[in-house]
Image (cartoon, rainbow, N blue to C red; front, side):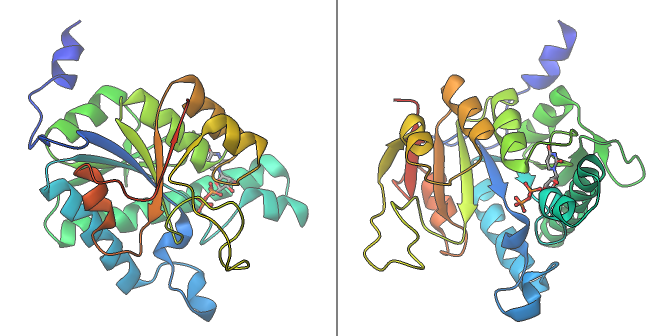
Length: 255
Ligand code: UDP
């Protein structure tokens, strides 16, 4: 299998301790500002802050692949409720993720990091198509790979795309970076007595409807024995400390 030698090139900067390769799921909203209208679109300062967090992880010796959402621009299911055909609305949503992916690629390049967008819907002038072995080659060369356009199929979410790509690239962990620092038994923004889980199983997440990711994404992780960590992208250095093996946020596992 000649192509396997591409995928198995000697990795750049492997972590001695902690994770060798992570798949980071960023929601579109993680790139938007936090106030008023700035929740829509891309906020330059927020983008820069997120890119610095990602760069620190790569510099600490962990390979990073990203799946980015598009909810800061468009969500298919919401648009379909106001009359746009669901499949078309979902394609619009997938294209929204491409805008975010290009912004992250640019943000990373500006701070000196190699990055490549790979889109599940081919858009040749602006991105590479998704090619698994090529993605692995980029990662092994120390580049960040940003997977855009979700799974390429309507009726899915970028959470499911994150589980799928994480399994495909043999990521050690899927990291869901949110505005909250872990999984809680109720919404901490609404309930000051909400309790944060240190560890929880995928079955518990499904049974208790903890709202971490959609059921398809959770089932894919569970069935492939892929651990997930939920942590805050707004907590400076948290992502790097996690990648280095510190116990940050909530761990979700099959058992
Ligand atoms: N989407 C899709 N198929 C996929 C991934 C995403 O149809 O495989 C569409 C869907 O309409 C979704 C939108 O893209 O609402 C944006 O993705 P998502 O809602 O997951 O973004 P996030 O909430 O993470 O920002």
